[in-house]
Image (cartoon, rainbow, N blue to C red; front, side, top):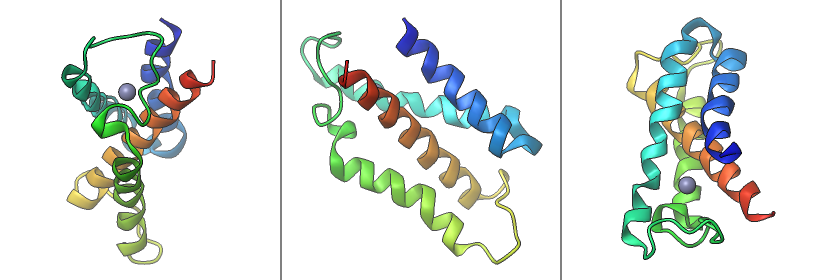
Length: 114
Ligand SMILES: [Zn+2]
């Protein structure tokens, strides 16, 4: 249960810390990325508390995680100096989706260690 709670609390914390001007929308986008867990539907059983998601489900594998990293980084690299990413631009939204997915993978990964 703690794990599920973290999937809500960490995005909220990150949004408040780093995207304060539009933290409600940022929290929303970060939490929506949890749909990545739909790949669990391909697995049998769908949910197994003993299983580590990372490296098992297709959207939780290394190539997917690299893609999420790029989604997070490229908008940062493309924006002009001094400009802040806007949550109203496609780039800003891709950045947040990438970040949400990275947070998700991190939390799932931490879960695998225990
Ligand atoms: Zn997951």
